[in-house]
Image 1: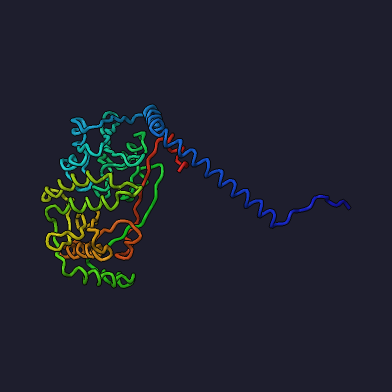
Image 2: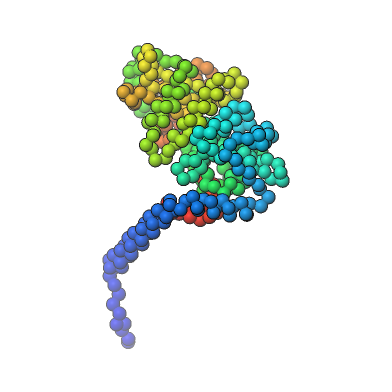
Length: 362
């Protein structure tokens, strides 16, 4: 009988070699990723230009006309497309016409017929619709969801829609998407029962007690500017740089408040104050039977945990008194303490093929 001269390695040795190999591969991948990330950052303008050129040459029957200012051709095309988000066309123009922050406008057509107008602002290295953080759950005027998806994919730019997309996500055919749960307060039910179940009543009672002496007002003069500016300061150093929307929010929401009686989407503010001293406030919108919180700002000299809760309670009480059915809290894990899950929404990223092929370089 023949005996093999080879000696089988111990299982622990094999495991150790495998572990070392895995760690080496991970380290090598991280090093390559880091080097490529630096190169991509330095060469991003050229990469974006090249991706856009390739897209222009291969987009088929879809045509894109770019403009850095809002012009008469865009104006005429807007009149042929459906309104979005309960916002009249003339007020939508207030949002897109503003030149600060700088914008790019894409008139997208098929067979010489406008199918979408997509207005963008730069955020970090990518672009986002100007509607983001200004008009809830809206991207851009388009003939339908499918046309909007074709338009976004024809731009040749990396466009991020951070949140607020509904069941139309599949029709948009984005390069990448993600889902998240959003939360709501059912204003015609016993919503305090949910607070009890989440052990939230202690915070609620303390907020009511601590802020009982404060005054509360709705849509006060100057409150919109104060809230948005405080929000800007609070998030100034956040790497996500959502504050690029600050000037658009101020200009557009101010116009919406002035046109309160003729727009379905309405913008409101709630402010807690002691005399002339503003303490904390929220901007919220209403559409149909739903109110939706947009952003908040506070006086940094006061305790956030109670003033913020007190502003939410103030909006709830106002919405109940005015007959609304739902307070849409949007997404965010901490919001589960205020209300149950209302459903699932999505965010999406649209990339031209060249940039999409390099998306793994995080």
